[in-house]
Image 1 (tube, rainbow, N blue to C red):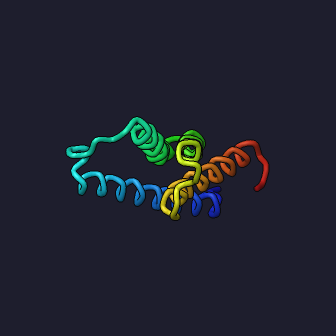
Image 2: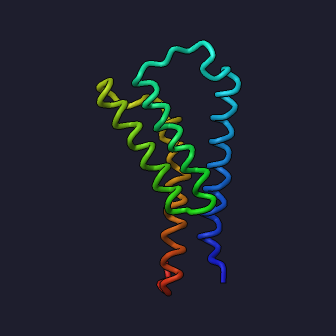
Length: 121
């Protein structure tokens, strides 16, 4: 029997994750990529971690726990690198929202694993 709470978590995470990845792609295409930008080494590291977070959202469609950990871990590393480089965390809510679907994917993976073991969540 399908657990309706787990399915709700799964589809909420998938829809919000797909929307986030779509918006990131639209920003990248709309800005013309790196055509005129001269990113610093720090910018490239932060971009790599941000991309890792987005990749986690794509991977989570196949493996919820791996994708969720990749998303949340990439976002946490992004925040840590930014903090150590500038002395403050990124401002605004947008970067934190990127980790929300990852947390939902982790919850879904956890609930699925418990169900496979015969434990009710």
